[in-house]
Length: 320
Image (cartoon, rainbow, N blue to C red; front, side):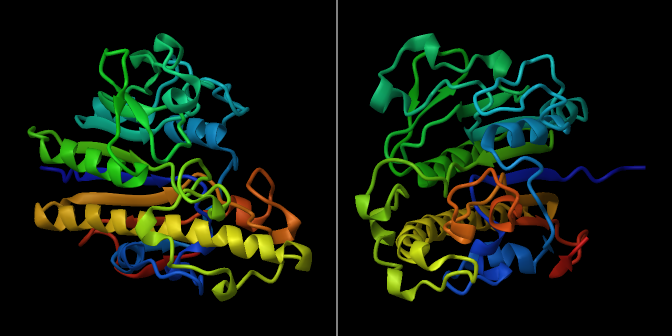
């Protein structure tokens, strides 16, 4: 008896809250490509981050354990190589594993590395033993500079620089890798975006949300409809900040569309399980708070979508 071993593609976002997609009811933004993924697959409405902080969530994600169980309970902790990861399990199952983008499981290495701290060799290099068992790894621990991002690959300590806006460039890097993939093994590929996490670069009017120039005029504060739980004294700031946040998400959605188009064009859409999700959300002024790390819906509720044509139901909404 033969078994179907689909490819697996994770599209992983940073700080994208559940409410910030049109398929989840946000009135301010249209995300046609993510909506398409949802309409062709299963959209979960009750997915929650077990730990709404970047590092602990990622540790739990790749190990299948609580962050405290794998000893990564705090921001800046390191996931040590003795922990078995999902990459190890898929490799044993006969998959080729690859990772592109933000890692953030190697301590505080890589914060705005070349652009602000200056390249310091091994001080910022993520050693292959600390790459979670992924065989082909094109990653950086943490950048936050969306216009000057460097990544590690192979044994080379000197960094490689991404060309252009980070989200676009990571998509380019993933597509370049997948286009060159030449093996009978099914693949497990992670595309880990740093967007729409706040960062540096771009127009300062967007208050820490680096927006590609062609997206700058998409949103204006006066057009933003706020959630009911944003206090009056936070509303002006929330509207201004959300303009940048939504513009980053619009760009993110376009890049998701590029990936979906590639799957269609290469005939791999029906044999690839696509999983789209985020590590946590962002308060954006709700309850008078900003960022994450608190047990409110805007911080802990995340988008989660699965698509595998002819296997998973199309357009299913799962509230379990």
